Image 1 (cartoon, helix red, strand yellow):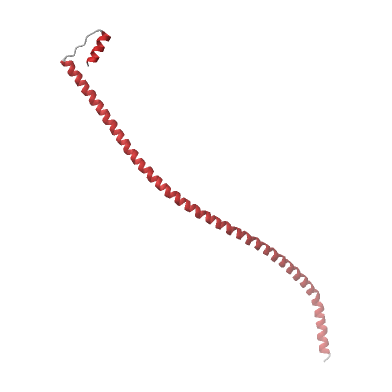
Image 2 (cartoon, helix red, strand yellow; image 1 turned 180 degrees about the horizontal axis):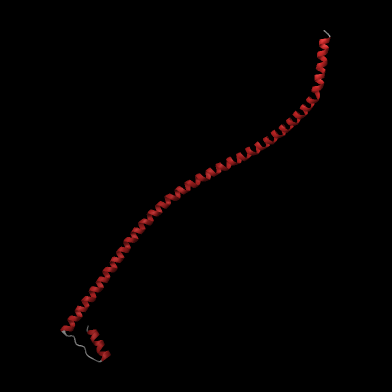
Length: 151
């Protein structure tokens, strides 16, 4: 307080006197400023405590999420490996099926060729039979007549 009085005197060239009433008002002002400062400090501490609590909760949540993620990644890796094995099996079976399909197609082509040859031989044979039937019937007629006549 004395320092402020000296500074005021040098700047304003006036003296300042502290009376008991002004001193009491100064103490009252100081108390109210101190109370306001303490209140602001308490609020700041409360906000910081709340923030620290939330940070701890967030840290725990992140730790749990990391733990869960680790297990999920392990499960995903196992599932990926199984899927790759299944894909490999399917690929092998597909290749086998393609070979079997190709073999079946070759066999189908051979059967079709054989069926075509058999059909052609059947038509030729039927045509030969159709040509030979009248001669066989005529020979049989002659043979029956000869057989019955010679008795």
